Image (cartoon, rainbow, N blue to C red; front, side):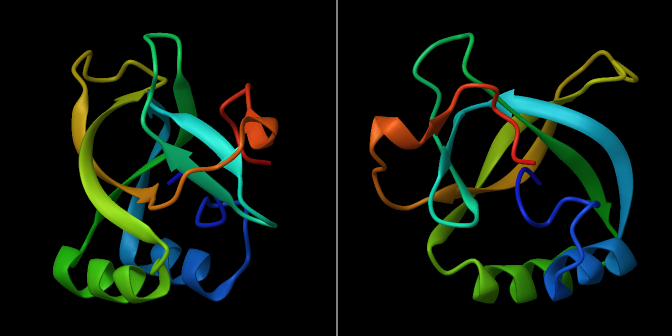
Length: 117
């Protein structure tokens, strides 16, 4: 997760994720991060240096948790992408679900650091 679902946030869905998943650690994946409003949106990477920082979780009951998140993330499309743990624990990327924003965003909203704080 790269936005308001990260472990440091206290909204209802971030707390749900905390209860229903195990945090594996900080991770990154190819993409470009943008400010939508008070929350971020991720769009596809344009080049090899475009990375979005976030957290990787292992869901205990994937179907149940993803159903709830899909309903909440209606402006987003859930897609499988490769994510790499910062710890380099496995040395191999994981295939992970990510919510990609469905709409184009202006470049003045681009977050070059790739991290939502």
